[in-house]
Each structure stands twice: as C-alpha cells, then as structure tokens.
Length: 153
Image 1 (cartoon, one colour):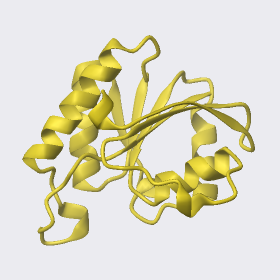
Image 2 (cartoon, one colour):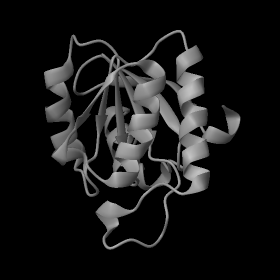
Image 3 (cartoon, rainbow, N blue to C red):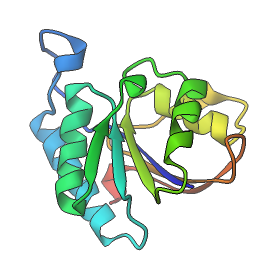
Image 4 (tube, helix red, strand yellow):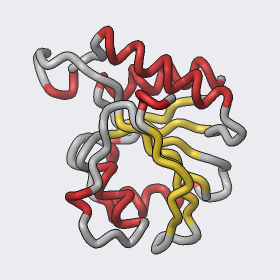
C-alpha cells in the first residue's frame, strides 16, 4: 500500500476552538503548492483521508480539487491520533490504491516513526505542508520513498 502523509498547511492561531482554526493566507498558498506538486507526480492518491479539524479539511479540499478525488473525514485522525489506531484504521484501505492522510504533528511523525521502525519518534519532525510517501509492506513495515517539505515543491 502506498501511503502519503501530509501535515496540514499553516493555520491561524485564533479561533473559537482548536478544531475550528482555518488556514491562514500562507496556508492557502502552501496547500495550493502541494496540490500542484501532487498533480504532476507520477503516483497520485486516489483518496484523501483527513482529520475533521477545519485546517486539515481545508488543506484536503485544495488537494481534492486539483486531483479530482474524494475526501473522507476520519474522527480517528483528529489531533492526538494514536499510531496503532491509525494503522488499524488504514487496513480498511488496502487495495484501494495510493491513499493520502492529512493530519497533525506530532501524530504524523509518530505514525511514520512506528511504520519505519524508527526508535526516536520525537526526532521525526514534520513541518507544516510537508509530504511523506511511504510504501507499506505490512502493518509492521514500511519504507520511506520521499519526504518533501513544502519549500522544496
């Protein structure tokens, strides 16, 4: 299974709640940049999974429009996502083709570290609008195919 992990783009600091923080202007530009990058990539996601937080959904919507794919909001991907739960939930998408998960940090770093058997997960930072591409051999093993920060797209 090919799995793309994308940390949401830059968001405003103030909102009625953390889940309601929208993308900033910078974040909108970042999301558009990632969308253009993925649209040109030889391997594209066929489905986008997203945290239900507004900033992740807005990031996902920009990508979905550019790639002409659907978004599935996933409660399990909200801030505080546990790697083992994410791995269990991702099993349902095996065979669907490449899937992109838009989420949060440190959650995505912890998930990638777990899948890559990296022993220092706290040392795997994922900056905003950074994209990882993992190839999962099983729920226990993956290889990192790419890790691209937005500024290099």
